[in-house]
Image 1 (tube, helix red, strand yellow):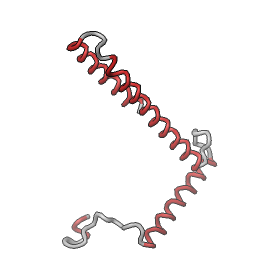
Image 2: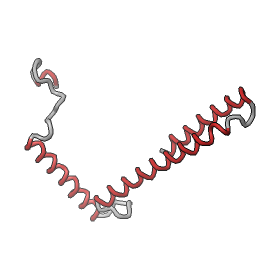
Image 3: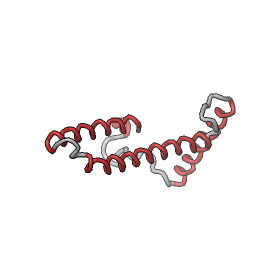
Image 4: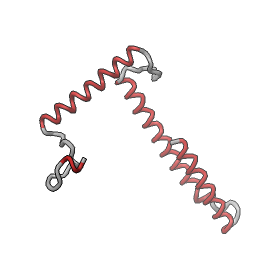
Length: 114
């Protein structure tokens, strides 16, 4: 996200410099200030949302500090993965998840598609 924000800032500076070359120095400030402020806020919210999701996932995996590597965190991670696999298998058995939806219904045999 930070890299994309830096890329956006660079592109905005290119636009400002070309606009000022055509309209005069300082002409772009009135037009770009609000856009820059709005997009900066959007990037900040996006970064905060991603960080929040990472913290939430770390908590659900038992990695409160986010460092991981401890034996307790590894056990919690394995429990979480096991739970997810069991849940996925249960959904498949109930028919709620379609198995291999990309496989053809008719036509070539399955071995020739693989």
